[in-house]
Length: 416
Image (cartoon, rainbow, N blue to C red; front, side, top):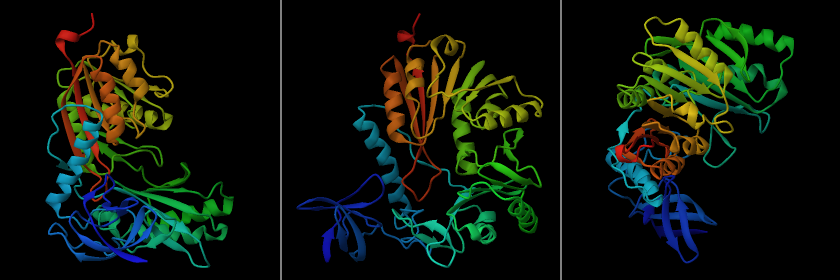
């Protein structure tokens, strides 16, 4: 049954919140002060109409907004959006009782996302290709994605459809990750499982027709027609299929800028959760680097790029699960600075070892404000000072935020 409510504030995931006798009601695509008509389903509601809009509302630029679950904030004016997003970080740190200077939000969207993941599903006789609807397994079919890099915007959906058509006999749910690289498109398909020989041969022909640089299934390379290279500083890296990358090129460059600036003057740096080397390869222009990463393929790609790039200082590499086997105090004490860039789960075990080490500087890069706060609090409790907190918005139009924290051990509290 439809009802009218007033939105009082925004939640951390960009939903508007209305108060009711039974508690808060979360309404997507709404803004504080708006009167809206909704259809409630427990604590969540579907927006029926905006009856009294906020002056901070604007027309979304994407025709799929409101159906597609990829973006949550296109209805917000830019200034309002930036303030809200920074405030989510302020609130998270305040809840963790962390006092630190939080800088202005940096827009690092650049030309857009350099990787998209399109879903292929067969809920009926037809094949459906697109993004998932918010909080749903329903596929919203799209012809283009306006927040992707120009080369990907309109090219990605036809690639996903062609691959889905080739594999449709199995009618398995597919997730097709398409990355823009310097040599074209790198495509990794998940969900199908092992292929028969005829299907592999067919995909090789399809990659030729689509002019793909590389095509893989679950990280297993079917064909590499050109090395799917990504430039990282002076180096050219060919990461393993489907491996982690920062969301945008400008986002990576922005994060690297803060990391290298903070580490200026350090002679030996540890790069933990290094991936294929976006920080290590730039840091090695001035310092010796020890890069540690769980994924062996990423470490191999980093090592190969280092050896092929003249003019870099030495990079040593180590494949190691830092959740189960963090670097210990004696290992950490060899470094002038440590860079930590973990997944959303954070780096609690590693933070505890850093806290009892003699490392004077930790640069924490995080895609989750809550785990960033938790790990920073561990270090601050051991005498580190959080001297800068920089919010970097490379996940534009979503609630997600990248954070750079620079933690320096107070001279008076350095361990002897």
